[in-house]
Image (cartoon, rainbow over all chains, first blue to last red; front, side, top):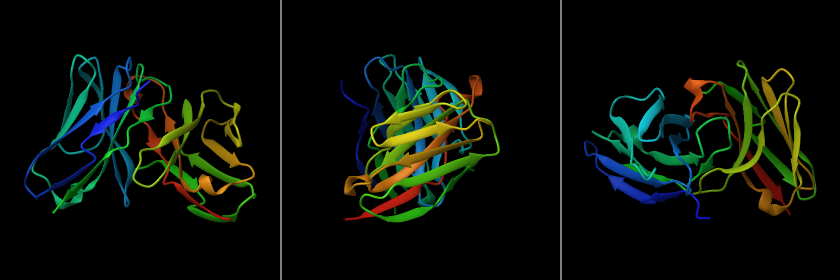
Length: 113
Length: 114
């Protein structure tokens, strides 16, 4: 069974640009969550999607957005990039998004210069 | 910000020693999870706990869901060099606002000397 796949693995962008990250969940998993990991703030929840609907959202500015497609694949977008957006972005999938263990992908390392 | 207090922040141990780390929260969680993260990779689920008082093992790893539902610990017995990494606890609330949302501890960096 393939795991959670995130692309690309590494990305370098310039301040002010926008970026789109992709996540393919484990087959059959319908819930996809996104997290930002930085040395200072640790792992922080961005948002969760289930059946193409955002069900939950963390405390991030509106520049961070996402969507989910009918095949459960998800994308997150960050617009008007700032230096502080440099981080490891992780997605996690679970069958329903309830109280079950979540499987994480390897992440996308975003560097903003 | 994070609501979980994980300790210790780092540990330096000799191969073969036992390790213990714990997490405490000001809030009650319905689920406690323990993850291990290697450099450049995503966290890997080690143990999931779903009931207060539950004690679960996975090989040399043992974790418990505290009776108050506000704490959890993870023990690693007879450590080996491949145990090196960062260990995170994570809690999840019940209910709709918890969908997909895990609250993570700050992590425990484990170093094992051969």
